[in-house]
Length: 322
Ligand code: GDP
Image 1 (tube, rainbow, N blue to C red):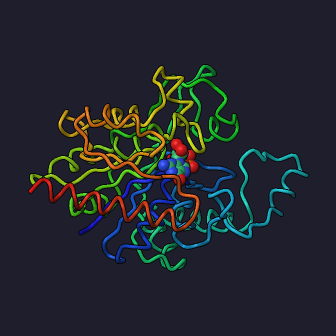
Image 2: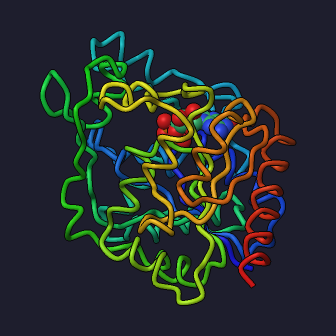
C-alpha cells in the first residue's frame, strides 16, 4: 500500500522519519509545505523542506529539530560583527544548501528538481516533494498588520496577535510534479502532526489537492495526527493561533478544522494523544474513527511506534469498510 504524508517542519519531519524507517522506498511520498519559503540575503530558504530532508537524511540537529547537526556559526558571527541582520539564524553547513539551491534555481531548475538532486546526494531513499514549484508565501494577519511568515515567526517571535492568514498566489499555484500522482495512488494520506494553519492548510489550499483526496470512489483513508496535546503545542505557535482566533486549542478543534468525511470534511480517521482521552467521544461524534495513544515523539523508537500504529489503524479502517 502506498502512503502520502503531508508535513510541515519539525513535528511533521519526526513522523515522516518514523514512516521512512518502516516502509519500503517506493511506498512513501512526503509532500512538504513551502509556504514558509522566503528569500534572505538573496538566497532561497525552504525551512520545512530542509527540516524534512535533513531529518530523513540523518543530518538534522537532534536538539532543535531544525538545522544541521554539528553546525558551526562562523558566517553568523561575522555578520553580527558587521551589524548585518542576524534574526534568522543560518548555520555554515545549512548555508551551503541555500547557496547551491539558489544557484540551481537561477539556472532554471525547478524546486522539485533541486530537491530531487539534493535527496540523491543525501542518500534519502524515499520521495520528498515540495508541495508546489510556485512561490506561495504565507502571510499572517496580525494586530501589527500583515506579516510575511518568517517576520512573524522568527523576527517577531510569534508575539503579534493573529487574526487570519492567506497564501499569496495560491489560487494559481500548481501542485509540484508527482504530488497529485502520490495522492491519487495512496491508499492512505497522513496529515503529520504539523501546524494546521500554516503547515498543512497551505498544502490543502493548492487547487485540486483536496478534490483529489476525496474523489477516490473507493475512498482512501485520510488520517490526521493531532499536533495539539493537552491543549498545548509541543513547540511553535499552533495553540496560540487557535486561542487568538477565538477557538479553544484542543485535539477536538484540530479534528473539526480538517473535518470528517461523513460531514463533507476530509478525514476518515484521527489519531490523538492519550492525554486527551476525555475528548474521544466528542471526536467520534464528528463521525471519525479514532486511535488514542502516546503521540509524543521523543526518541526514534517513538517515531517508529507512532508510524507503525498509524499504518495499522489505517488497515483496520479498510477492513471495517469491507
Ligand atoms: P514547525 O514548522 O517547526 O513549526 O513545525 P510543524 O509545522 O511541524 O508544527 C509544529 C506542531 O507540531 C506543533 O503544534 C507541535 O505541537 C507539533 N509537534 C511537534 N512535535 C510533536 C510530537 O512529537 N508529537 C505530536 N503529536 N506533535 C508534535
